[in-house]
Image 1 (cartoon, rainbow, N blue to C red):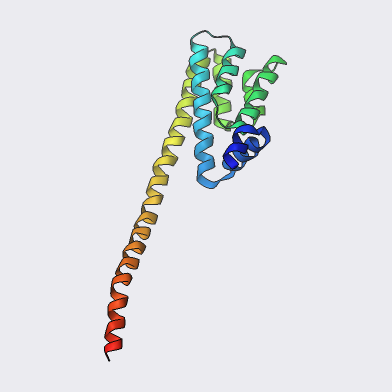
Image 2 (cartoon, rainbow, N blue to C red; image 1 turned 45 degrees about the vertical axis):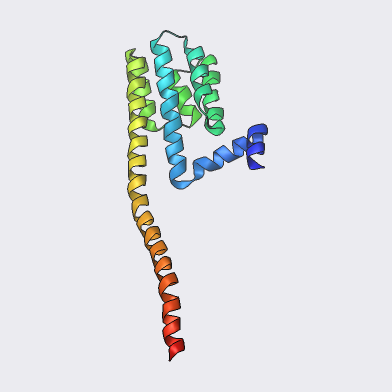
Length: 169
């Protein structure tokens, strides 16, 4: 039922995606993955000579999370109203301050594609770092779960044997 509601009701999809971003590790990983994907596509399109608004709209449609996409759509509205690109990115509320500063520097220096590539690398590195750390955090939990299964198996074998010893007395 949730799957059907998620695919057919925009309000359910928006709420579920917002709640997904609030989850402890999953939300952070999702945010970095979506922002990295958005910045990468935007950088490639700008470098290829696609007009700014068209590149933004195309990159926004790449983002799967509807909550993030909803906030990124404010960027195109801000730019069409005459704001600088870095200010529009800042008002979306989805970018970290370091990415905003890098974007402002790239816009001032006229090297926007190079700065977008660096921002993409920043988000990709953060994503890779979190994913690597999550796997090291899960490892002890898997060992504990395996130990629990072995203990249940051992008790399943030895408890009947101990009961037979006590019944024989």
